[in-house]
Image (cartoon, rainbow, N blue to C red; front, side):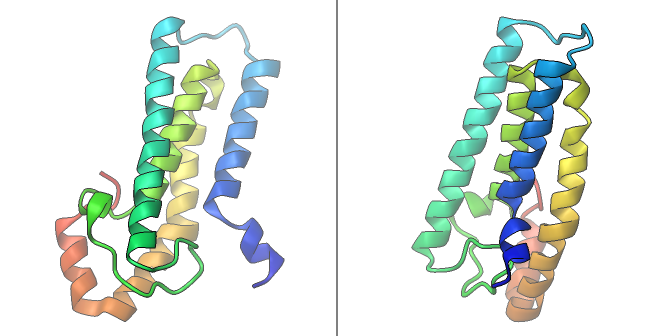
Length: 152
């Protein structure tokens, strides 16, 4: 696999967004603030929930003996566990971690990173992955997509 394929992975995009939010919060706060202990708590809940969601998804992918790497072909269509609630629990977890850390760091000006990150993840990873699953698992994927939402 080419190095560009390894660099173009969701965790790298998440780290880049987190780095931007941290730099904004630490270097350019612009006197804006969301609050104190309440946003810290909410941020911790969101980030922690996102990590738990990612771990549950990774466990289910491993249990089903299929790849977790976005650019690879899936061996199985995973519809059990956390995948019963959302088709993309890892990406949803990424968004929760980003939102949570933006709140924890009080990075008000970084809030627009959340919809930008969602847009990038959908275009670069979710749509191509779902297209591969649609081609490989046809009717099974169609039934799954009909009953399980992409995000929540």
